[in-house]
Image 1 (cartoon, rainbow, N blue to C red):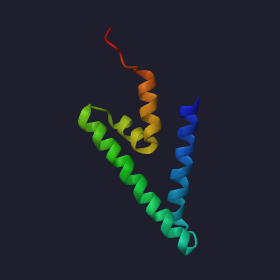
Image 2: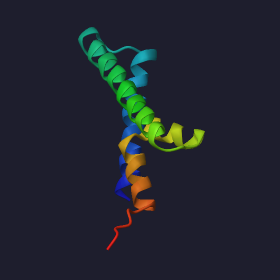
Image 3: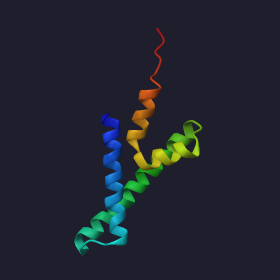
Length: 86
């Protein structure tokens, strides 16, 4: 439930950041949002590259990880819990 709420929040953030590209906000805010968009693309891209280096993933999973970031990885962790050796 909370993971899906986080995904919705991230979609809203992406929408807000991308909206600035097509309909720019006033100048001081525009530059801040441009930097935030750059930072988000770099961080989600870095997260995707590091994950791809450790395990094979499909194109659809790559897309979801790039868009949703940490929330998609939390969903993965919830689906596949770690097995502890006892």
